[in-house]
Each structure stands twice: as structure tokens, then as C-alpha cells.
Length: 85
Image (cartoon, rainbow, N blue to C red; front, side, top):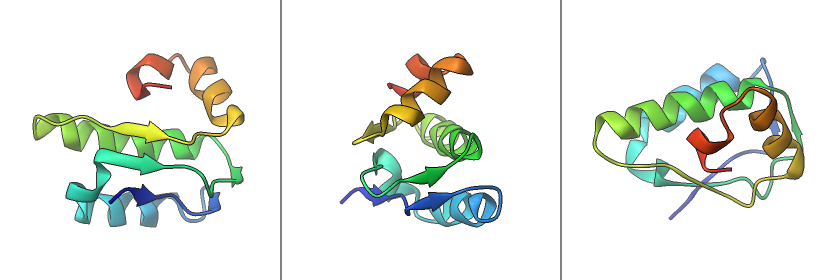
């Protein structure tokens, strides 16, 4: 079952979301971004932290249904390939 990102990921909730994901690392293999509408670059920090955790466990992260803005942000920061976007 994929880990569903909320509609909003900003500085206000990014740390809590990151912690939730790390506590449920088994669910992080697939990240569903279909609900993601209001976000800033902090979402990239969350995704990178999750990917780091999975890589340490010998697994990989798959980001699905990512909005175009997320792809653009990842490209601007040079991490598109790292996140598979």
C-alpha cells in the first residue's frame, strides 16, 4: 500500500510528516503524490530523508503521481534523477 502525501506539505508540517514516514518505513517504498497540491521545496527534504532511510535498508523509493511543479522543483535543485522524477 502506498504512502499518501497530504494535500499540503510546507515548513509547518514537513518535519512531522517526515517523522511519520520514518516510523512507517515499510510503507515508504511507494509514495503517492496524487493529493499533493500546496507545497514548497521542503517536500523535497522529506522525500530525500525517506530515500536515505530506504537506501540504508537496501531498498528504493518510488514516487508516483507527482505534480509537474514537484518535477520542476526537483530539477531546479538537481535531484530529479535521485528521486526518480
